[in-house]
Amino acid sequence: MQFQEFHIGQTFRTKSLLVTNENIKEFASEFDPQYMHLDEEKAGKGRFNGIIASGIQTLAISFKLWVETGSYGEDVIAGTAMNNIRFLKPVLPGDELHTIVEVIDLQEKRNQTGVVTVTMSTFNNKQEKVFVGDLSVLVKYEV
Image 1: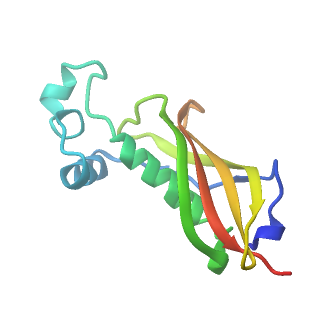
Image 2: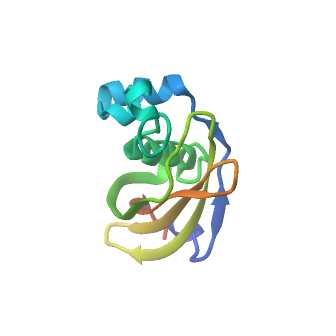
């Protein structure tokens, strides 16, 4: 979609993605190698009674699900900002995540471009919000 096709208040719902024990460990071993994501025994004695997904993994899943809707398509130029990132609940193995995306701001720029800002809210299969964050991207604008 091009800049002029978005409007404030517009919402999108993504498909769902199952988070597994294996992909939590795989992601964490490369990008966030902390015990609560890798060591089941030690994590089992902690606050969450087992391993949890990295917040960075939750953000990445949320973004992946949003991009896979195809809403930006070939009209996206680049990301410009991420703000108000909050990890609200732990993501556990077996959680199935989906994201609701709402357009919250539109700013026309020069050279036939505009910035689209959305709030991504990610929920588990119990409909508990686990993540929220704002994402801004530069997209093409047709005159």
